[in-house]
Amino acid sequence: MRIVVDLNRCQGYAQCVPLAPEVLKLNGEEALTYNPNPDDAQRLRVLRAAAACPVQAIIVDQLDLKK
Image (cartoon, rainbow, N blue to C red; front, side, top):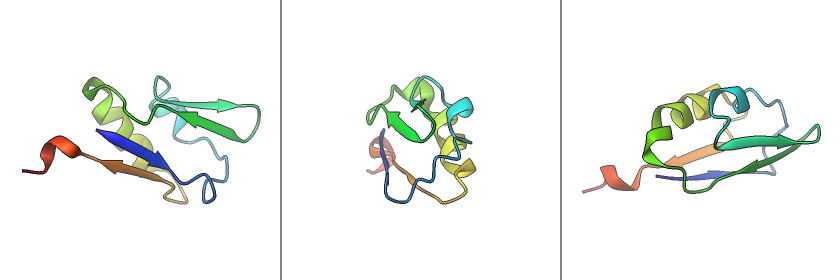
């Protein structure tokens, strides 16, 4: 799995962070950092975090599902 966060779109609401804290982290009040290649064990958490983003800034590419 690969994720990309559009940092221009991200408004720092941080609703995603508690849903996938091992992958998404808020540094300071608005600076989001993330692991672009999280472990597959984080898949459900990452998908929930992406769905919770009010500005849809998190894009999830599920590489292994493309066959």
